Amino acid sequence: MIFSFKKSRFFWLRSNFILLLLTALLLMNKPYWEKDANVMFFMFVFTAEFFLILLSLVYGFQTEKVILSQRKRAFNKSNFVHGIIVLIFLSIFFALALGEHMPFPSSLFYASILINVIMAVISLIFPSWVIKQYEFSIYEESNGHINDLLRYFLFFAWTINYEVQIVLARLPFVLQRLLGVIFVAVLLWELTMIGLIFENN
Image (cartoon, rainbow, N blue to C red; front, side):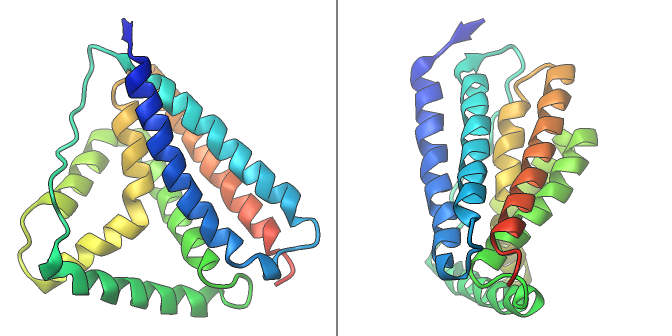
């Protein structure tokens, strides 16, 4: 089994860039944080970083079981407006649904993690189906406005789980399921930390 430090480092750097963008959604609402929320925020980042390091190590290994992501350009100028519509709709919906407990845009991030928990649980049983369903919905040629709207919704709501499952798919059955369970636990922990950050809102 060959390990590529270069591939592992690339995945870690890319993942941390995404983590930085996501944590910015929480920091934007810092005035609404609990008095001791800095501790929960640290635990949120620490747990995410621990799991990203674990994933980076898996990504660096060249295993016999390789799943190639069918990535191709899915978003362009012609459907960019649909992405804005979906973002506005989701922002308004979750701002109203969670507004009493959590301010926007943190509420949007919280909802995304919640949806990813559901998909991560399904992935424990049908990982290949989840991967193929995401790729079909995101990367297949658009069949109209509804398809484009659904494409952006899945991108906002489902991408975290997809990116993790693509990496875990490299592993043998038992290890894949074991890390899948750890992933579900991490997501549930992160939901708890975000909830505690805004506990008295």
